[in-house]
Image (tube, rainbow, N blue to C red; front, side, top):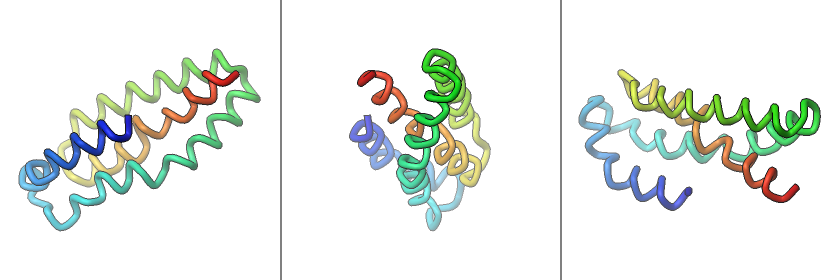
Length: 101
């Protein structure tokens, strides 16, 4: 999944930067996606233990889809960076935890 995202971002990063007229800050779209990964893995594992795995899984799916849609409707580069930092990839480690239980 990370490899797919990296391929997509590296292909379109210049176009995104030109559309938002912010080529100097475009590297944050990929960096924000990577920086918050470990933080969320630990956080959502704790939530799963406390609230139950099924409930946590449903919440994670809702958050995942909400931020994915948010990434599609951004109007500025800062919004895109925020949605990518809070959104999709950050919940993938939670799926791996569920698969090992």
